Length: 232
Image (cartoon, rainbow, N blue to C red; front, side, top):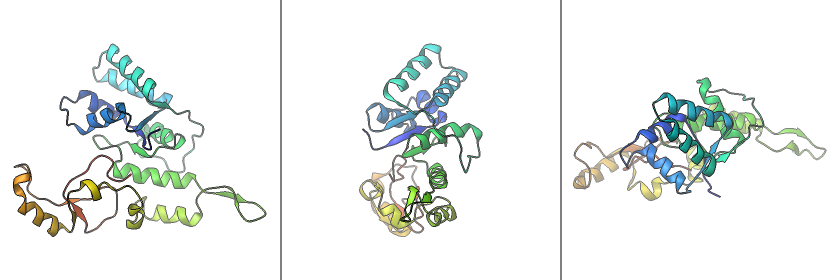
């Protein structure tokens, strides 16, 4: 079973289906799913929204049926067992996706149009939701929680940081910047390497330094702007 379990917003599906460029990030996401690199989670509400939006944007009924059949065949259906959230998304249309992510134990959630699976803003929202609904409950005679979960102090710390990972938490994750980022360091250091190897980059690129996505890494930059699974 793939370690990565993702819920994809309708906008990503629409963009991928429209894409004609093989290098499209959204198309790459679906291609990687079809190759079995991650599990695509869906619920009844999500599959209905996929169908409605694809039809609204001009896709034929046959194409929509074929795509939804593929999702049902290769995807993993999530039955929604709990519906209450301590913190709700700003867009009501995103509730179904957050509920699917929480009920399906997703590792990645995308509710931002055009972003990669682990969109930083959405991941931060997801962490706050996860901690907010995962507090341990009650204590037995030995002082152990009856329902395992997060302590009030852990929850408060995550909420105060608005879901952002600390640097030491980031280092415990799989960080693609260390293997695929080409170079890692200060803005000046990355730009110096960029200038020295200018012939390896496109004519439209004017600088080398790119900020790290999904983590509080003030002052730390990379050469490559990784958009898919930068931190997982």
